[in-house]
Length: 485
Image (cartoon, rainbow, N blue to C red; front, side):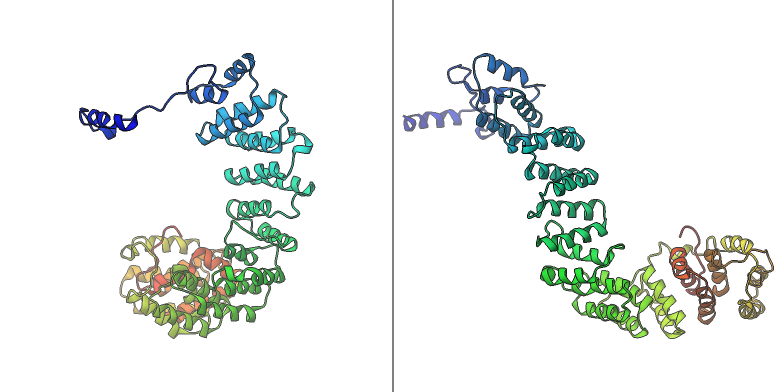
């Protein structure tokens, strides 16, 4: 029969006033014939906009029908498949309210997930407490824990995880641990808790999943409250082949440096240089250079600087400032001059928006800074004033002479009675800027830095106030640009 209809249908298509393949024929609607009708078909015919399926369910029961448990589960699954989650939850709740079905933990798990999606995690957590005790198994708790990961709630996740621990549900399954690892690492950035969980998982012989091993491994070096070199070595032995090669040396080096084993850490940092690839070399060279400037030797800084040049890598402002400070503190003026030459030729990358405007506010900023400088408490600045007086004699502009004279007076403590370099590092920097502006006086700059270095907490202050950067800008010949740090 079909083969007899084909020619006629083809003729019908060819005579259509439009492209036949653009037509959309409606799907067959299930017959409302009560003999062939079913609850599932009625629900499928119900529009998505229907507020509630409960009247339809009650009507079906009043007709003398009792849907089976498997049919209701199939309906719930079908509704979720078509994103009709609200209707799916209504069927699940009606099924439970009838008290005519023997529900399983799967039914409670499904309902809990729907509540979490539609009404929030707090409602889902409250629902968990209403489930009969014998039905609160691993899967129901883990469903709530997974929802916490999906919607980013650490507090409810911690409460649920502790309940699972109290009920003995964490013994041999890694899923709850991996959920918490993800929450602690990505949501809370709590590296201490990541390390604690990793150590516990190691004792239970559970495999971490969900967070890259390299990121988990880094937590051993970043954690401030948990310093466990043995735990790190065990983790490295088990999972080292699943990380990037450089990570296996760099992060242990960071931890050993934190533990005070400087020589061992520097050895591992140097080994890291050999394990870097093009994808991470620029980023890691900056991190390594900062370590070498703070804890390494002169040869380390020079070696890495040459390697960076060979690969066409330039350091950012922060790293380059630390290099300037390193060379100055070690009386290595040649190294400092070399970096300055790189900047002059454009080889470096200071990251400043516009050097052309560096002089815009320099005099106003400097005058304001000098006016605020107080009287020094120690006589460590006299040797600098001699050079300043000589610079005054060399200048031609009267205004410039006056301004530099005020710098000299500030250093000698003649202006006010409040000189404290420890608490006014930024103001000290302005004075340094004025002293070396347009003169490239590297030795004087180094002398000032050394004097400031004798003050307490100078490393933190210099990093915070960008003292080295201000000095460098001045030594480049234009003076500090001023403005926001």
